[in-house]
Amino acid sequence: MSRISLIGAPVDSGQRRRGCLMGPIAYRVAGIEPLLAELGHDVTDLGDVALGELPQADCVNPTVDQLPETLGWTHALRQRVAEALESGTIPVVLGGDHSLALGTVTGSAEHAARAGRPLFLLWLDAHSDFHTPLTTESGNLHGTPVAYIAGREGFDAFPPFPLPVPGKNICMFGIRSVDSAEHAALRTTEITVNDMRVLDERGIVAPLREFLDQVRSADAMLHVSLDVDFLDPSIAPAVGTTVPGGATFREAHLVCELLHESGLMTSLDLVELNPFLDERGRTARLMVDLAASLFGKKVFDRPTRSFL
Ligand SMILES: NC(=[NH2+])NCCC[C@H](N)C(=O)O
Ligand SMILES: [Mn+2]
Ligand SMILES: [Mn+2]
Image 1 (cartoon, rainbow, N blue to C red):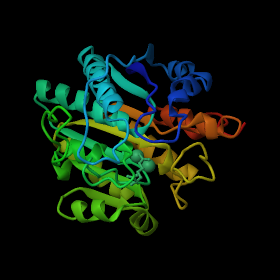
Image 2 (image 1 turned 90 degrees about the vertical axis):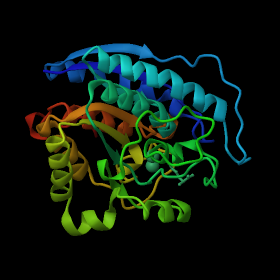
Image 3 (image 1 turned 30 degrees about the vertical axis):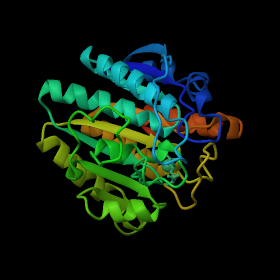
Image 4 (image 1 turned 90 degrees about the horizontal axis):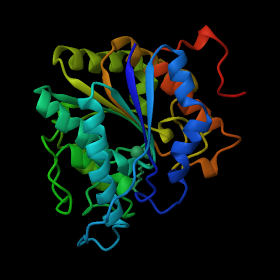
């Protein structure tokens, strides 16, 4: 049994396409709370985080969009995630676009530093999100959190990341869209980039087990960030940045089941769901089912709800 804090993060400022702010409600309508409770967990929905007063901020890169909003969310979510961990629960953040990870992972890192434990990061995404505000071409800050977490320069407007996560503690799965500036920067790090080619050749089990073994032997905390576009768009259309060739239904469930069996995950983000782009709620339902797999549901225990 786990104690779970659901934290709604209606963040819409990391990209120009509107709609991710409806994510938290879609997860609730898709029944995330009762489903996790049915699995035997103690679930508390803490409601949505509110965006406080916006700081003044600008960036030398004029394409950077909605920096004050993103800074506001970073601050608010850092606090809420750190509090949820402090109270002994697993924060499950219902996003919201991926810029929210600038705050949630900072909260996890703060808690890890206090607890004297290392932090590992599992990034399930089509994108590496390794831009800085200085290298982004789109100006969309949802493409930057991993760079911030890894301690790259260029985040002057942001509070310094508590203890940057070393590259060897960061593992990405599902990657199939990397911009050239991200590519060049990633090559200088020890981040494990399991792109789709790796998954095609090796499958998902061996590389994931290798990573989880490292987390276990380091007695570390593990933050998991699940971007809807990790999944193939044919099963998960409700996302602004679809990239063909993503994880299948079974690959995604298998990742979640293995994570559950490891017992290592200490915090989770569900990000980039844009309910405005969904088809009869199927993406929201699939994401909720994946969350259930992460908390112990076996696909064959009962019929899957995702395509009802
Ligand atoms: N979290 C995401 N969906 N990120 C997509 C980023 C796409 C592209 N690399 C950009 O920086 O604009
Ligand atoms: Mn992402
Ligand atoms: Mn993505």
